Length: 281
Image (cartoon, rainbow, N blue to C red):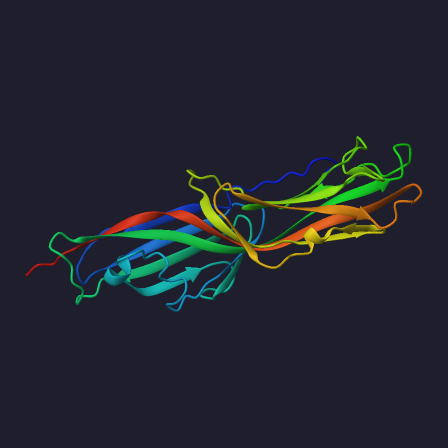
């Protein structure tokens, strides 16, 4: 919290401690083990929901024709608390460890020059975040109001920020009656393309509310249906009017605009290659 602009941190949510394939070259009919160990380096707890029984998540690492060449014969997850469950809450500075066993069926047809398979490592984390900004209206510049209005934005892979526009008061978050006041809610994927911390975000439209006597939001903020997709560095913006039910008030009135959103951050943690060689007679 602070009395001025909101601040946001957390462009690097997940850190890779260990990523390896052993061995990275196998013969037809053989198997390999894959290890992925990650830490939550963001400022928010992150929830991950998995299906470790051969569906949904366990074969995500197999790309393209690799699904015809390799089978996931075992997939384990070790996380905080109870092991081998389907849902984990990863608090900041805690680890989650994945292991896969990949097998090439002896019946598969491997060409004489072998086959190269690319493995992709993505981890989907579910977040719920909120941001707020306190605002006030004064009947005139001379009217006494509150000092040190507070604001806060989310921390984590997605920035969620509440700004205000149209103030003539000369004070942060303060309007004069008659101002064309406007709220701007910004959602931004903080990851940057080209870095090791990349991924895309699938977010629900934020729920935006105002709490305060005589203060209401325009209809633009009432549409919370649907979802948004943001890749590295992309952002989405929602703007709506801030209105006073009665502009003939005396003194000042104060309120708080809040925004909440659920989103899934699918982080790209890199790739590896495994070579499947022909086993001749």
